[in-house]
Length: 249
Image 1 (cartoon, rainbow, N blue to C red):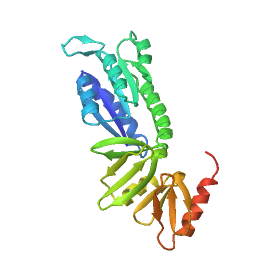
Image 2: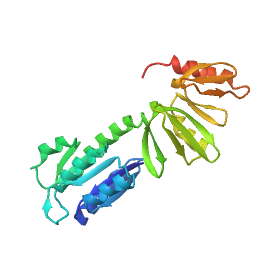
Image 3: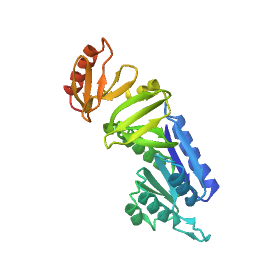
Image 4: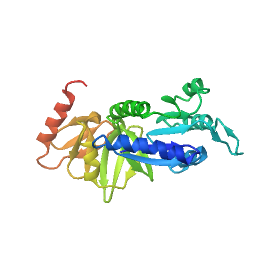
């Protein structure tokens, strides 16, 4: 699923863009968009800053009213605020004028489309977005942490440990995250990546952080010792060697 935000002060434009997105979605098997409409940039900024809303892609009109009701290039100002908030998603401007095309580069906008936007041009933007996003998602896992959807780099995960109804994830910088999901649900997301293995019922381990392995225990680079359940050493040893002697990507 991809989270998409539409920000425009004109409801008709929001509905038109959403229809194009829904038509695109229907024609591609397995694709799912979660689309949210925002009639002001302030509303979108609030959701990202205060509610942890983190869309993968934002379509934003440049000409929107500011706080005083003056119709100005408030969309461009909002984009700058998004980047200052370290929003790293894709940003596409939809506007009636080319006047601010150069300024779009300053906020790292991926596209600048002049209204009325044609189906072909919008679909080309989506094709490029999905291609890049699929490559990017190979490096991240999307998790709900403290009511926020957070992109966690796979390379940062050392291990996950089951603690009753929650999972404790330890990251490379020492951060510990509590996840309100089952170990099986978490492993279903991580099992697609060769570096992650189950160790008994209580641990998921990133083999990239394993310092050594013997018949009794696994030693992690941070000093953690994980004791191996009886009969698991042979399979874990094979996974460990397969990981380190795999073909490079």
